[in-house]
Length: 387
Image 1 (cartoon, one colour):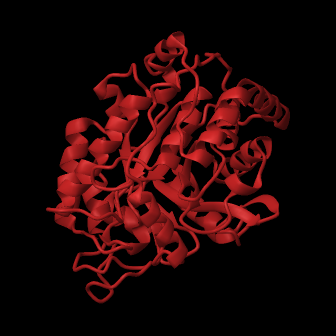
Image 2 (tube, rainbow, N blue to C red; image 1 turned 90 degrees about the horizontal axis):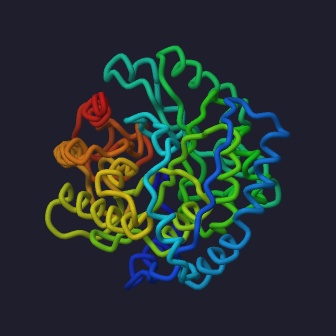
Image 3 (cartoon, rainbow, N blue to C red; image 1 turned 30 degrees about the vertical axis):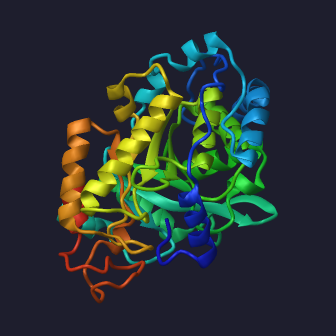
């Protein structure tokens, strides 16, 4: 997700993903998942996180190598253990029930266009996803806001304090459409530490990992396993869809399988935006979500349809999308009804900075939706979900 138009390179990559005709079969990738019980510490010490990182790296080394190779080749994994299929299909553990907020729209913290107190007063929204945590440089595994602001940046800290004063929760989001990923610069142990630093800086224990670039799935999975083992972090994986009926891209499938194989409990957050569609856009976003639900069924094979919906979130792009589609308030109402019917884990949207009609109709901007709407119409609509 990007506050403005994605770069040409980013759009080209998205087009190539969309052009992919099929996904690799999951039939041969079942390998037993080791189940461990780890005490949860709200604020783990460096020693605890280091120990968890070492354990995560050791336990996922085999599957990690497989998944890393799979990501490079487009394959989905290897192995043929029948007992593994049973383990993969086990019911969700208590960890999957660790809930992130039912509604937490994204705020681009690099854009000074949001007044959290005013937004909350007008809409009732109290929970927000702060985006994005990126690496300081291509050679430094140092977490920053947007690649430029320190975790202690006064503007971001002021926003966190306002959210806390409202009794709200913060979701920390890493990655995004552009910039240098921590996930590309750090080792798994460094990445787990960087995630923990970002969470501690906001007083949060909910992490959103938005992967739209090429990363090593095994590195991300090992870091997330260590983080979750050390502090019980609620983790969502935000990933692009390949089209209206295509489901997730092969790279996203590889990332989810790697997380599953590492024993990480996640919710999955498809970005239902920026794809070609026929018919109404509201119906198209629902069709894209249903295709992702089918993908989850092929990955977490033993879970019921209801359990899979309960680990599935959605994130539309309000107003004018990067590649042409337009999400109207009416489309959002259609999506909200669907989420209520399926009992989805959460709704987010990109972004609250854009939730106003203060720019020319049809224009693409990081500070307005490009459609005719009242201020915070989408925020007001979604704010009651899950309550």
